[in-house]
Length: 136
Image (cartoon, rainbow, N blue to C red; front, top):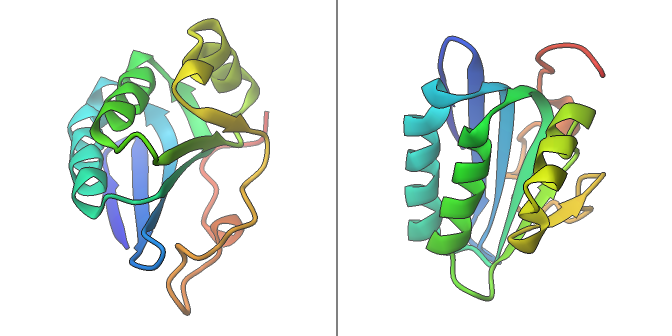
């Protein structure tokens, strides 16, 4: 597990070697301050070469074009057969994704996919991770 945080954001990346998969949990304000950390996440994902990347947006309280750029960079960096899944966006984030037609690059879901093989043994389940901000 890798966790990077700034003044207003937290990024957690969980990976599993078999099958290669990754869960990226974004929390807080995803804006220009988060961009260097998100670039590092794209580099890590590219090195791991997962067959599936799930980006959990449940705890994102604000998203700018930085989120869109991250998803586009991840899409380009990953192999063509890698599933890039965005799940649990809040209303304002979902609207941003829909308005910019990000659905062309990612699969959008309202829930967290049931596969949990990216979770290391003994690690907290995503639903047990601390929640930043309130509910919509």
